[in-house]
Length: 425
Image 1 (tube, rainbow, N blue to C red):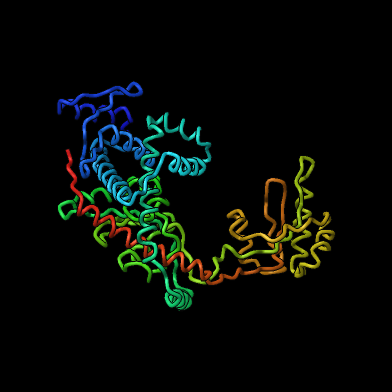
Image 2 (tube, rainbow, N blue to C red):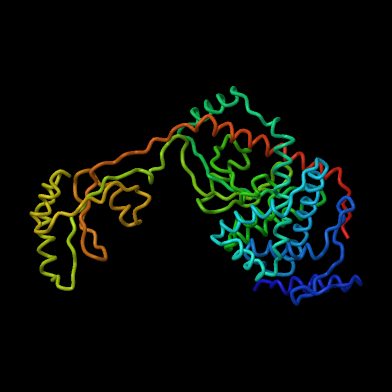
């Protein structure tokens, strides 16, 4: 059974009392006011930590025990230190994010939950999370995005030659596997923390396998530039990844996650959302022109009528070879012709019907299929395999620039950490 928010607050209060610190009430809960860390002399309070803990627990779908809570709290504090560093660096360049700036992001976040801003604020309140705490986290994300783009964006420019090389790479990879992937990246910022980070990664992967939300974990824990989008990396090919990551994807079923993978100064957890082949259409995107003969079943229908229909169909089946004659076949079977179903993608059909139609020879009837309202005999009268064009020039530029910028942003934050004075209390 997981820990409640009240237990989180109670544990924080207990820790506070043991250290002889004062506390103040808020929303009928006692919230500690002690300082948890100083980041270049700017404080992070235990109140701030509890607010972020609540938000994180809500994002990941709960926690299991106090040991996990302790590790979660440690990670939350480190993430908040990073947020402080980002905001401090932004202030150095006179970049300040206001509540109004963060409000726009808050509105977009509410829409992603299919809620109005007020409904989303009420939802946070029920979890014991103030809207201001949510806005503060957004301010750091917004400031970092603007800072990285403003300072490093020009250095991430992509030359035409690079785009041409990428197009050649895509063409040479035609038919090769391609993966739609999300990531969680946990940085080992100190060699002494190797074991702690590895255990955190193992616990995160275990919780996700038990039903926790991958995107929520990515947003709260991942130290990759993809964190803001829930870890989404988009479609990648094996040659775009380190071999350790690429090899892991070959053995993951679609919808599953990898074990933690040690690489690039940290641990990765990958989620495989889909797979396909480069420049090859997904077979499920094939469009079928589907027509039918329909025998309705009503309360007045008799078993004898159904048997007679099946007997006539069995006698005619070998001569039913043309979609142009479906109307005539229906009349010979003693029923009214049915309108065509039109062109439908194979992936949009129910699983059982998909199985019937995906290999059905064109122009010949299927066996009668029992459905809620009667029996249907299907014909596939055309199949069209969709074309998969090369990505547009601008799309390739955008992708390459984002990749470059992500690497530079990671180095930028690493340097800020190295130069910071952080005093954990």
